[in-house]
Amino acid sequence: MHDGIPVRQVSWQARMRKDKQMLIMMIPGVLFLALFFYIPILGNVIAFQDYQPFLGISGSDWVGMQNFVDLYFNPDFWVAFRNTIVLAVWQLLFFFPVPLALALVVDSLISTKIRRWFQSLVYLPHFLSWVLVIALFQQVLGGAGLVNNMLRDFGLDTIPFMTNPDTFPLLATIQLIWKECGWAMIIFLASLAAIDGSLYEAAAADGAGRWRRMWHITLPGLRSIIVLLLILRIGDILSVGFEQFLLQHDAVGAGAAEVIDTFTYFAGVVGGGWSIGAAAGLAKGVVAALLIWGANSLAHRMGEPGIFQKKVS
Amino acid sequence: MATTLTSSRKAARRAAGLTFDSGRPAWKEPASPLYSTIKAIIIGAITLTIVIPILLVVSTSLADDKQLIAAGGYVLWPTNPTFAAYEAIFSGEFMFRALGVSAVITAVGTFLALFTTITMAYATSRPVLFGRPVLLLVLFTLLFAPGLIPMFLMVKQLGLLNTLWSLILPSVFAAFNFVVMRSFFMNIPTELIEAARIDGASDFMILRKVVLPLSKAVIAVVGLFYAVGFWNAFFNAMLYINDQTLYPVQLVLRNYVVQGGSMAEAIGVATNPPPQSMQMAIVVVALVPILVVYPFLQKHFNKGVITGAVKG
Image 1: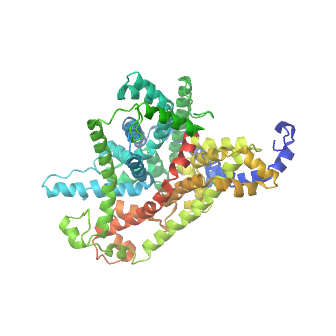
Image 2 (image 1 turned 45 degrees about the horizontal axis):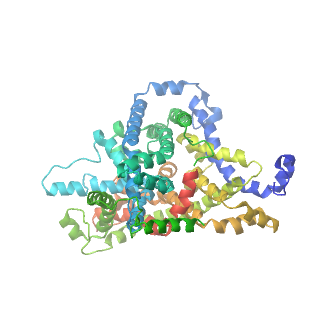
Image 3 (image 1 turned 90 degrees about the vertical axis):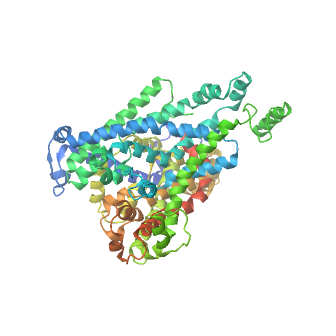
């Protein structure tokens, strides 16, 4: 190709010689993928074994689907499953629309100074670790935190914001919104900037007010990005946020904060049930992959580009 | 061309009396006081929820015990700032070591991660033998995750448990960053690369002398993502590190602030300053590097991320 010769007519040895340096460049990445992605995927076979660390994968007994059957009859797993779904629905309903709304507000700011300043501020929490975010929330809302201190000063009862299992989904969603909504907004802002201004001009000339223009121009303009993000969200539905729930596991208890990921961790690494942990992880991974696949083909059927196509935007 | 077009359009609008002086588009009505107020309230409230917690921890970590006791544990502005809490947490080796661990994994990790991502992204951004299958190998990682237990066993098998490598190697390549980097490289005109090749430059040379100088913005952004990832690494540390001397800052933060473990014991210090201030000081130590780096890289966000994210 580089020498003007059609690629197909060159023997692969010749191409290999010519692309030698490029192939060398692929080595570190491919090595990484092999070591920390593809070999671990094969390691999932322990989900079908009675894995004993001393015997290793080759020495442990095969038990077929027994671990999955055990999982099915394990009430703790179903608690984790239910919590995962509840939290995912909360996130979908209450987290998903917020960045969109915020992007519309930010986009309507006329002063570029305020706009830029506000944008840098709301991106910031995305770069803080979950440990830090939970620590900050504790300092403000915790039992000995700022708000409860003030309530005490006024002689009112304290409110257990951080430890109440009943309101935990609300708390978790608020934490997620605080941390990520600014950053999630970035992609909406980019698509808003891509909408042709003359459409607005024409609509305004035809007498469309602020809300009509939003309904008939802005939202249709954002349609494909909204569908794309919804797909990604649905594919991610079983990974509601590992660190966030692990960190609050003790404070609110397993009944509310146990999700499939933390179940895998506690059953496998902490409890030594390697095989059952791997079975839970594998089941989750497969279901998640199927969900993305399904949502993506649904998007195709709706005439949207989805994610697995090269020609997005 | 494009600029003249838009400026002539602007001029036409101004001539028709349609554009306001502020550069406000003609089709936007003057701001109504109601909407402006609502917007100001929204923006003000969001600003406060971000600023107050940060101000709170910084101020409390600096407050002296008199003010702290008078205020009941929390202050929003230290009247008599003191670094006693910082002196206390840094009086033993523990915090220094934790900071050192975090600094080392962040520096080494970011370097290796950028190296791997840049080479891989460049190689797959050009029509190269095996380029397509390798790209698919990477993209598949976006769809499926191997799972926690097999990863743990792999790290154990490689003998990385309780070493700093366990915090670095499993994260040196992220598919998302790869996609951002690759789509940036794909936008570099082929002619530039062909010209360098005709001049006799090797592929390594082209990457170093032609591609990298053009890619500073995207390298800054992706580098920031990786660096923040390594600095924030908590779960891997909890999973793979038992040895207290190898604790990174985030794990210290979790054990002694979030879980409220006894710091004085672990850090080996006398508790002269109130424990509250010491906890806050640890929070600040974890927070400050992000706050320091952030303003420098933030200007690259729009260029770097949006090219990648919208195309990806």
